[in-house]
Amino acid sequence: MIYRPGVPPTRHKYPGLGYRTSREHGMIVERDVAVTMRDGVKLYADIHRPEAEGRVPALIAWSPYGKHRAFQYEYFPGYAGVDRKWISEYTLFEGPDPLYWVPRGYAVIHVDVRGTWGSEGDANFWCHDEGLDGYDFIEWTAAQDWCSGKVGMAGVSYLAIAQWQIAATRPPHLAAINPWEGLSDMYREFAFHGGIPETAFAPIWQKSISYSLNRVEDVLAMMKEHPLFDAYWATKVADLSRIEVPAYVVAGWGDQGLHLRGTLEAYHRIASKQKWLEIHGRKKWQYFHQPSSVEKQRAFFDRFLKGIGNGVERWPKVRLEVRDRYYAGKFRNETAWPLARTEYRKLYLDARGAVLKTAPVKTRSQARYEAPGDETRSPAAYRQERAQFDYVFRGGTELTGNMKLRLWVEAAGADDMDLFIAIQKFDRNGKYVPFAGFSALEDGPVALGWLRASHRELDKARSQPQQPWLLHQRRLMLKPGVPVPVEIEIWPSSTRFAKGETLRVVVQGSDIYKYARWIARAGHPKTINAGEHVIHTGGKYDSHLLVPVIARKV
Image (cartoon, rainbow, N blue to C red; front, side, top):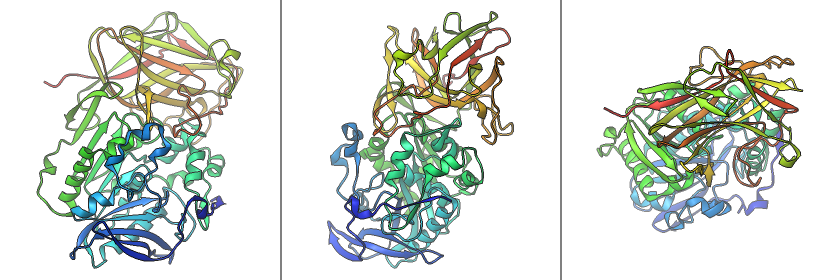
């Protein structure tokens, strides 16, 4: 393991360690409570609980971002859509608001995870060892004289990812989890998209989790040291089959390149008999904090932490939003994910007209574009940076689920290639139709996909026709003049296309959506690309897009 020295917490308004207690807004607030782990390391937590006597259930927010740091949405455009009236000064970034939960009979605990801020030890992130810390913390919480013995976990992003690892250890007193947009495979969903290193968001994230009195895992160095999926990355994948507690899982269609894929994979694979999935097309933090969502979170925890018979068991197993455009869509109830009535159809690429066709294309042709390896190179420096293919719908069509893009590709002047894919929507007048994207943006795509061609080897046991699963265990280099087939996973989406509207497939050698570096989004500014990319279509080159068409409910 490679570590880096922690950044002194005092550089970010850290108040320092020191147990203290106060009464605030009807809450007893204990700050810097020391909780000892099985190896003797102490984690520090802030506990907010009701002044009234009696035992209450607890909600744990497990975070590396600093329990003393309130919501940080002011760093994002438009406050990330979060209405300031929805949250109080006690609200942890991406966590529940104690000023809402405590008056309703809950304790809320904000934890500085191992090795961050004042907590002892060295920090290791999203790993099996972190799951053991969570186990110990939950059992300590359940034993406190103010706790009813029922413990839940809540929160977004890191606070959700940790729930997979912790729940997989099966703490006896963990009664329910609410993972709100949390990836479950750090290699495939955070560090290497399709085998391409993510180097835009990762450095920002590394900085945000590096405030420590000790050492923190140097994730950026480990990415360079471990470019293939190996034992190191395996420690960051929870055994989801061991999770059996009730789970209310929430995903967002807009979180392409971070949490979407892993949240849906986790929901599908956890063994919980009582589990519910909700998928929205809105901004992540806004949807988490909006009052209607918080009330639904409370209903879930009231049922499983308090035993209140409020009908949660009758919730639809899956509730998803079918999007029309940015913040326009309709929610619908379903019985399972993926949708059982999905019909997968092939749309064949034809480079001659830059179109997609419903029937196999007989005539061979090629689409070519230049693929510079550095996105800082001016687009004016090369002739064409992408290939694109359009399909115009003849009738209203819903696409919900995974898509797959099969391409026959060749790298002219190189032995490898990085491929970036976007699925986009255009209206009847040819105008681009935007969707919520990443955490706070408003011009996102329908869906995204990525592949480094040398990583094209498939796991035959786990791959499905609509979802290729890459092994990422060795490199298969390209040979000059030899086209090869690659199968590219397009992350899930749900979109309604009206008659006359267009689906566009974009293929290029760099990120299709580029933003200022400070915006939290997936990015890959450095690629291995050089020369020219060639896409072969027609004849034996059966390049096609597999789309998930949903029939109307009968």
